[in-house]
Each structure stands twice: as structure tokens, then as C-alpha cells.
Length: 187
Image (cartoon, rainbow, N blue to C red; front, side, top):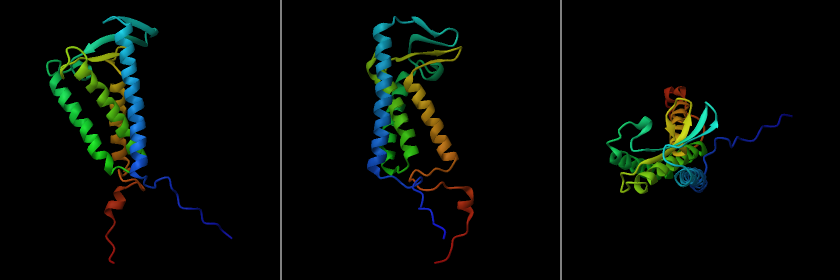
């Protein structure tokens, strides 16, 4: 007698409510952590102050960044403000189609990071969409960044990996190239 194992629910699509809740939890925690750490930097550190955490490896270094990654585009702060607003709205528009928990995690992180830096653009001096982002994490000789930047980078990498490995936005089993090449069956 052989027992047939129950069908796997590992790839079963989740309801929109569960996916939205998961994305919201990730977004709230990520955004809260980003804003809390920036608040601590702004209120407890002088601009350009450095605090060694792990000497030679990790330090907090309080700077303000009017540009994008690696301080590129410093004269175009308003462009980054508009772009971040478009990305945030895009995530909200796209999310109702999502039934995959992995996609919900990635989009929640992207929304959190985007909103974290957008908040700085809107409310940090000089404000009105031209604000400078609070950056403070300095690793070795790498660029100085913040939690929002980390969320954005990790989320974009996650989206690329989800697309590359064929994880469908709608949940369910992975889509492979061989699935696309199968001939259609007649009904």
C-alpha cells in the first residue's frame, strides 16, 4: 500500500489580503527602522561626525546626500524626488496583482526604501522635494548609505532573481523556459 503525498502548498497562490499584509509589514518595519536610525543620526551626531563601530570596517559617518547612489546627480535632487514618487506609486498599483509571498517581500522592501528616501527629500533641509538624504553607514572604502538604500538594493536584486528564476507574480509553480516551449494541446 502506497500513500500518495498531499499536494504541495509551497507554491500555492496566496490571497491578496495575505500578500498585502506581508508587504505592509515589511514596508512598515523597513520604513520605521530607516526613519528611526536617521532620526538618531540627525539628533545625536554632528554633520560629518564619525563613530567607529568596527575599526577599519564599519563606522557611522553623518552626511547629507543631495544626489543618488555614490552622490551622482547632486544638481538634480528634484528628479530623484519625482522618480521615487513614481516608484512608490508603481508598487502600490502593481501590488494588487501579486499573489506570491516572495514578490510581496521584495515589493514591501522596495516601497519601504523608496518612501524612506522620499521622506528625506520632502522634509530634510532644504525641503520641498529638494531635501538631502541622511546617509550614515560607512563600510570600508565603499559609499556611505542608509537603511533605505539597503532596502532598495536588496529588493531590486530580489526582483531580478525572482524574474530570472521564473517565480510568477501570481504565485503557483515556477515558470521555466521548457514550459514556454511546450506545444499547445488540443481540447
